[in-house]
Image 1 (cartoon, helix red, strand yellow):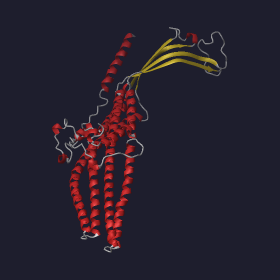
Image 2: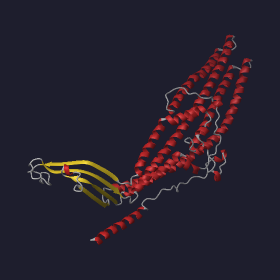
Image 3: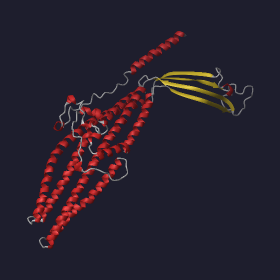
Length: 491
């Protein structure tokens, strides 16, 4: 008898070690070795030299904290409010807390479940047609009734412990999946912040552009008013026709009509910025466009491989892939045998006075078993196959994020390069049109130019100045786009 027990125990131990050995290869750890990235960004040589040997030591533009990148104190204050109060940011922080709670739960998934049952009372009442008779010693020498007699009485207090062996790494993979989810929510929060910083900066620059365009419109309206007064004097003197006066009035009205349009856009843009900052609609104090200087002058972009570490949405996609890989291990483990051990113990008595009578009311129970799923309408296999497909989707999404990031950086680089060339021509154009306006106005007052030449020169000058302001806005926006594309804005 003893030898038989020893053989059973030895067999179970051998099987246990074998299962543990097999479980080591049940799910491989994910490593993103299959991702291929370019060595350098396209157009990076035109703006900044790339030293691949020093790429790990020289901070890139994306690693510069946003407080250092932006040189406007008003903009910095606005971003600071948004990071604290923006609703999307608060939602992302809440998601982090949820994922953290799930991770804490997964960390103790391999510990046993312990339940304490305090003061359980059970009483079964039956009548004469029941298939059994009163049992036990509840009635003693008394005759039990035919109807609603007590068939069973139980007073118990027990402790139940249940534990499942993590043979196939089920709980280990669950913990890894929840950890990846927790880290992913942190990266998503960073990605939300980079997008938020980018939106506020570009919205603020647009506000400065609208202010500058409003100044241009007002200056042109004032100049047109001066021209109109001269035309009216000439009309009264019979030197020009009513057509000249009407065309000049129309030109003045065009400039004047632009003023309320720009004021409307300014108010809407202010409301938008305050919404992003988590505030009610209102005005926003700011500097003028020509007095603002951007301190983020360095265009060191590093190499594409750094996006895997510094850009939050790319790293979040990698963490999502790791989570999906761990889920494959979890679904795979459900298809294998599970070893579960249940232990219960406590006191159990039929009569109340014997409830805590030791040792007469003590009881204990040990249950151990190995369960192998056989047929469950293909549910476990389907879960496993779907988990593998979700992992493939996550890998595709990761590759898309990497390629998208590289393309965004390259697009921003070429845009900045070509914008600088355009700005040179626009600046020259503004200088020429301003001289043309001055000359046309002087000639007009001397009677050597007609009103049409003055109006044409003024219209060209206003268009050039508005283009100049717009080009400056595009340049600032593209610097912000490059900063965001490199992963900047969350530091």
